[in-house]
Image (tube, rainbow, N blue to C red; front, side):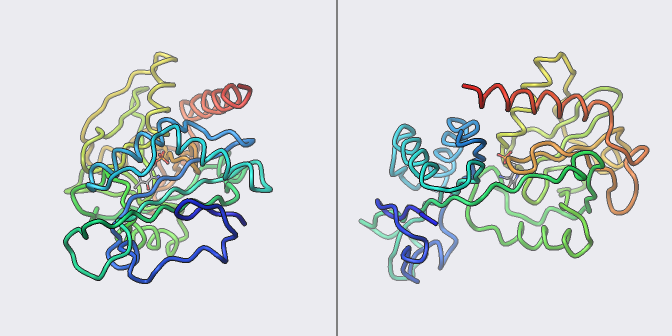
Length: 282
Ligand code: PMP
């Protein structure tokens, strides 16, 4: 497997980073994940823009322009065997003696890898998935795609331990997002979505779902929704670059509505798949 590290493409086993890297010591860095379909990086510009925003928020200078990133991503894609991939970008504040304050004159560590894209199973798409809920114990800058993911890791493991696919998070009883995904609800034909504030990651798939809703004249209400609203919704959806759009049919073991993927979900999934096909043909 070919990866990229600090200016060169090399085999994974040759890619090595110092134990003093601030990513290792402090989780001091940002990352991005881009799905690749048939060697086409999906919504690449949007991902690169979000990555740039994460780096700015962490006061890390972006080592490359979006055009340079795009070229590197294309090279990495071309060097893999699989046509469907998941590209991981990662920048840390670099290698320096351990001290919380930023080191002077240190260049960032830049890493990229590609893994085979794991997409939802046919059963998950047609039958829906189960989620659990938990209190959102993360910090107040969930809009930054920081590599420090301890809370997300613990929260996702809670789902796995319960035989569920994701943990839906509520901050003071208000829906924020999933441990590694965004959440939508449907009530009376209206899509309900939390606002892109500092308590959730502005998902690339979240934006696409709202774009598709607008194109097809489905009403959307952006707002703060209590857990009671979410539990009694007509439909619940989970979105992310790798999950795409899935229906959530049970939450904490209780069915959502009749416990089946809903009609608006089926329409949205169709629009999403059509959009993907269109993009891949270009
Ligand atoms: N929220 C969190 C916390 C995530 O880790 C992810 C996955 N990147 C998402 C939302 C979904 O974002 P996207 O649609 O860009 O994959």
